Image (cartoon, rainbow, N blue to C red):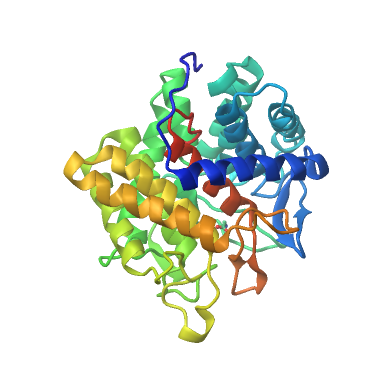
Length: 384
Ligand code: GLY
């Protein structure tokens, strides 16, 4: 449980401005959305999803960051975040809709609530979720299984995805909380597989690796939400930037820190002039006008954390890269003067299925707010 008072850094004027505008805008939006689960904004309004959808943690997570950052008990943010957490019980207890994304969902709700307020119910929920996530581990292939069959007879029991690098911090938290090392053993084994089979020698990253779920041998690389098996999906790269950096922090392992740097260098080398990535770094040029602002926001948070883990001589490069991305998101992609519920425009959720392209996405908004909170300092970060 967090007991110390937060201390803020003297933030740059643009950060102060962005934070104030964000608080105002989210206050307005929260009156409509309340304790629901937004995903992508269409025509200016967030479309709400069922609580089992993988993005269900991001809205309450964003509200917790604003709650702590503002320190104003009169704002409704805490109450709404707690109501969202309660609504997720139906998913946790219902079991059938759970998959690897349980980390995204309960790190941003129950773990965060527990870190800030120390409630026993929140702790129990997060530990239940961690036990479930650990149960998805494939011992032969050393990976946490992604998804469940979507249709009768479908076998995706050997699929592992890069996104899961952001789910394993739930396991590291569970070990810190209980003293039981089994959770972190599984987290490290999965991240070891990320190093071995997902990160390419040039620092780019695969989305899906299919293993033979019986033997654990690699069977195939799949493009997934990227352009193809050999492309470089930018949000997948961002999941790796941040996930590997968190893994380096949680374990103190140099090989993970080196991998986090390698993927970060690849990510940064691919950015266009305004520092916000195309949806896939290796997509055909004509589709690259489609950006993914959510990938930029997520990677920026990873870069700001990476700056804290490296020697001082290296830190300023990562910190200024993270800040540069966030500033561009605010100045060039921010929707603050508009009739639009999303905070940052031009996210791409799933290009291969042509779903939610060029729209605000709740995880883009969440990581934008986390980035601002990091730049202001003195903040509780759920994944850490
Ligand atoms: N599958 C999670 C994502 O869209 O990044």
